[in-house]
Structure formats: C-alpha cells, structure tokens
Image 1 (cartoon, rainbow, N blue to C red):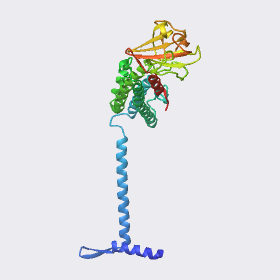
Image 2: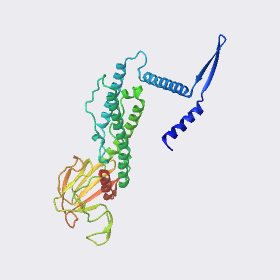
Image 3: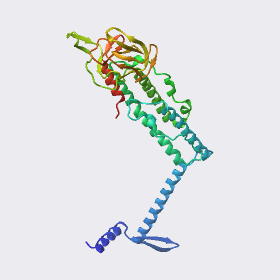
Image 4: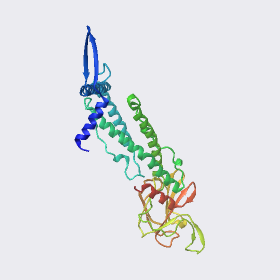
Length: 353
C-alpha cells in the first residue's frame, strides 16, 4: 500500500469519527447556521487535550513542592541542623561499636571497615551530602550485623569440636559498653536505626563472651611443629610392650625446641615430678589445666601469669622418655581430654575465609 493510500484511509477513519456537523440557531426571528468540519473538530480536540495535560502536570508539581517544603513556621535551616545532629549521633555510636569489636574467627574484622575519622557535619551541609553519609552509616551497620552472628557461630563450632561448653567461662567483662547510648533512642526520627543498633549491641555482647572464652581455652599450639608420635588413648607402651592408656599427645622435636602456653593462665606447678620429668602445669581457670612434660628447661615459676603463645620452656627427654619430645595433656574438671580436639578447634577459630 502506498503512503498516499494509507493517508487516505486514516483521513476516512477520522471523517467517520468526526463527521461534519451542522448547528442552527434562531435569533430575533433569524435562522443562522454553524458548520463544524472534521478539521475544526480535530483542532478543538487537540486543544482540549493539551489543556488537560498542562493542568495535570501543574497539579503534580504543586503536590511535590508542598511535600518537599518544610512544615509551616519551620525554618529549613533548622531541619538541616536536626538532620546533621542525628547523623553525627549515629556516627558516634557506630564508632563506639567498631572500637570494641574484633572477630578472631573472621578473615576481616569489623574494625577494618572504612570510616570517616573525626566526622563533623556543618548544619548548612547540602541535603545530598547528609543523605550520602547516612547511607554509608546504614551500610556499616549492615556489615556489623552480617559479621556478628557468623563469627559467633564459628566460635561455638570450635567449642563443640573440643567438647567444652563455652558457658563455663561466664559472662564477658563489662558487656554493657556495647549498649547504645540513650541519645540514639531519643532521636524519634531515627527509631529504626536505634532498634537495629540495640539488637546489634546484644549480638556483639554475646560474641564478646565467646571471644573471652576463646582466649581462656587451650586452643593454641604448644610448639611450632605439628608432628606427632603418639596420640591420646590406648597405645603400646614403649617400655613394657603392653597396651596402656596414654593421657596426652607426644610431639617429637629437637632438644631445646621452644614450648609455648596454649592459653592464658597461672603456673600451678613447675619442677620435677616422677615419670613426667621436668613438668609445667598451668591452671586456666574454669576447670581447665594443661601439662607440659619431659622438658629440658623451664622458663616460668609457680604463681606466674602467662599469655597464649608465651614461651614457658624447651623440649627435652627427662623422666620416662625414649627421646626428645613434648608430652602435652589437657585436663577438664579433673579428667584428661584429647589434646588433638583442642588443637583442631583452635585451627578452626583462626582459619580465614
């Protein structure tokens, strides 16, 4: 079909829709006629449509302007000042949380999050800047929320591997420092942020309890070598050739290889004891003790407080021993436990990813 033919068909359809109309009016005995052609009707319809569109556009613009305008009698600068103060309050609370949170079970701790040190917002700061900072704060809070529970779960998993209930270690010291300041709850326009911050503070308090327990449990390795010669449980005694219980883990290494404390604690014994030879016993509290036997040298004394991975002695072959090695034991509530379970738990705590 040619273009002229198509136009003819469109015009025919318009003429059918808007046929020529005749109007007659009688005025003072005279009859007058008015003819509305198809073209005139189309022109009137287009004008009416444009007027309607302009009216609708003006109405929408007016409504939007009213919504964006401050309430009657309120200065826009006071609204901006209130927004800046709210954002600064949020910043102070976020910084207090980031300053107290670490996660040994996470490859990236919360304290590595990007922050704006010394944030100071001017009351006259443009609204766009304030909203941008507010959005960054929401993202930082979300990052903490996404970190706290997985980190706590990894620590719980480590204690399950070791067969120890973390609740035996009691509450973390001063968990109340994680409670959000009252100034946050007082910001009525930021209730959602306040609720999120309060819930996060409780999650981080639980995490702190687990972190404290982790530092007190013997999860660190006693030497820098992972070699083992005899494990925990029944074994053939090298002196008698008969099966006998072995209450610890034997780690062979050259004489004078450093030996480290596996958790914080207090030295309960340091000296010679029967078949153990030179031995160090550390009380970690909460029913946990560790023993290090057959040592060639002792570097600590009774009553001394030690930290995880602090050197306490050196490997030897004193006592009932067939060669240089460390005999390492873990005791819980007066019963020997498999040290390997604690070492695996420690590896799980500090693994990355």
